[in-house]
Length: 73
Image (cartoon, rainbow, N blue to C red; front, side):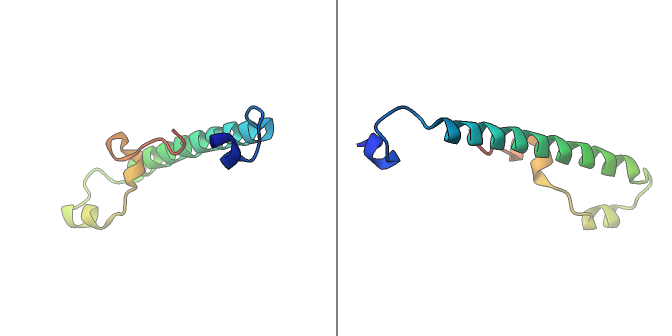
């Protein structure tokens, strides 16, 4: 039944496997970029910034491992 759903009788399509691998690499690159930009953003913030201004700054939850999950696990 599963083979019929995938539309083939043989093994996995090598083109599909290559595309999935490429997308996983790209997701990893983008996650690294988010981490780098978050660190850079934090370094640019003045240390004496007021509490009210900190509350107004938008941060990405994906930079926190407890809030993120692998996109293609």
